[in-house]
Length: 202
Image 1 (spheres, rainbow, N blue to C red):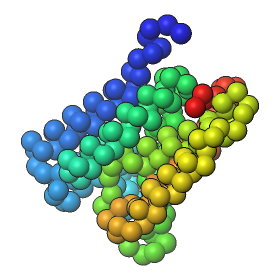
Image 2: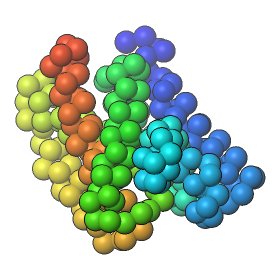
Image 3: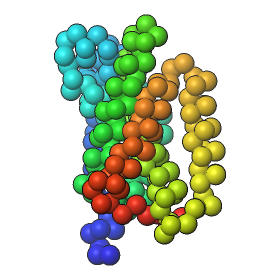
C-alpha cells in the first residue's frame, strides 16, 4: 500500500467543508436560527417539493444546528471515514457518502409527509449512518470470509444509537435509519455489480 492511499483525503475534505460551512454560518448568522439555516440550505419539505429546490438534498448534510451537533458528527465521520475510505477507495467512498446523505434526506421527507408534519432538518448524521451500514456489511461478509466477532457488539452499538435517537424528538431518526439502510444497500451493490472486494480486518 503506497503512502497516498494511507491518507483519508476525502474524509478530511468532507470534514473541512463541514467545519467551513459552520464558520460561515456563525459569521453570517447563527446555527441556532432555524430561519437562517433554512435560507442557507437546510432540508424542508415544502421548499424541496413545491419549489423544486432539490439541491437541499445535498446542502443539508453540510450544515449543523450548533457546535455540539457539528463536533459529534465530525468525530464519527473521522473515525468511520478513516477506516472505510482505506478499504473502499476514494471514489467508492464518496459515492457511498453522498448517496447515503441524499437517501437519508429523502427518507426524512417521506416520513414527514406520511405523519403530516413539517420540520427543518440538517446534519451529516444521515450520511454517517450510511457509513455505519457499509461497515456492518464489511464486518459480516468480509474479514476474509470469517464472521467477525465484532458484529454482535457493533449491532448493539447501532441499536443503542437508533434507540437514543428515538428518545429525542429533535433528532431526525428517519434520516438516520434511511441513511443506514442506504449504506447497507450501496455497499452490497458495489460488492456485487462493481466487483468491489468487501473485506474488513477487525
